[in-house]
Amino acid sequence: MKNIKLLFVLLLTFITLVACSTSTEAGAVGVNRRQLLAVPASQVNEVAAQSYEQVKKEAAAKKTLDTNAAYYQRVKAVADRLIPQVQVFRKDSAQWPWEVHVITSPEVNAYCMPGGKIAFYSGIIEKLNMTDDEIAAVMGHEMAHALREHGRERASQAMIEQGVLALGVATGKLDPKYAQIASLISAGLFVLPNSRGQESEADHIGIELMARAGYNPRSAISLWQKMAAQGGSKPPQFMSTHPSDETRIAQIQEWLPQVTPLYEASVKR
Image (cartoon, rainbow, N blue to C red; front, side, top):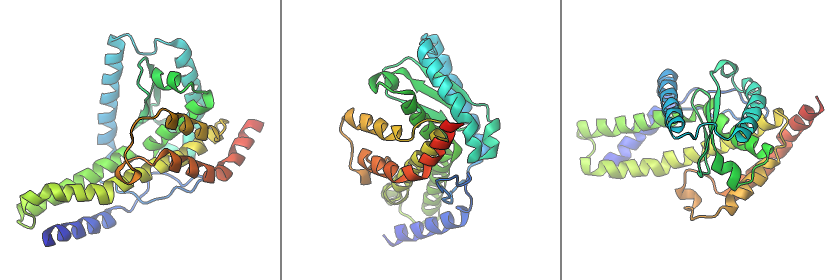
């Protein structure tokens, strides 16, 4: 156990030294956490672009890519209003090759890959009976993940964790049989809490993006109420990479005074 403790001291020290940058401006909501970004952004974006092209190719082959014209037009219209707002958080993102597509599928899913590659699944629109404001809440949240480079951050964490564990085993500081235990402890101490923090950041930035684009940020509350009503077994929050629906709703309610003036100013223009 002393060996494991030593490795986690080394891991914490390394993270403290490397986590010295932030990928975005704070915006009106004040998101300015320092991040661990050890993996090159170019590598992450290249992998994301390749993955996105594969998703499009497979969907096109199944004739499920943008086949619902009404859904595509709605989602595209929301994206067209949200994308100009991204430069509030990082100016370079205005020049990203943004792309948006709708895939016909019963999945309740949507995402924005690193570099601005957006996909919505028809299931999330249909099963939640989404308004355009709620589409904007989901899209703003997913765009925030890309702006904050959360995928790059998670890749950096995994790379460093595996590197430290491998070094410990190679140098005899860590018995190989303890490596899996150490990895589980790392997930509990660093990965899960940080993932929940990333989700909260995405919620926070997302409601500012939608507010600036003229979508009512209160719709983020109705969105998560609908998500909660979908049911299904969920792990306790301390065991999950996502905050509970109740926590999310409570946080959004706290943040509304920050972003409501932005929404009101937008709708007056």
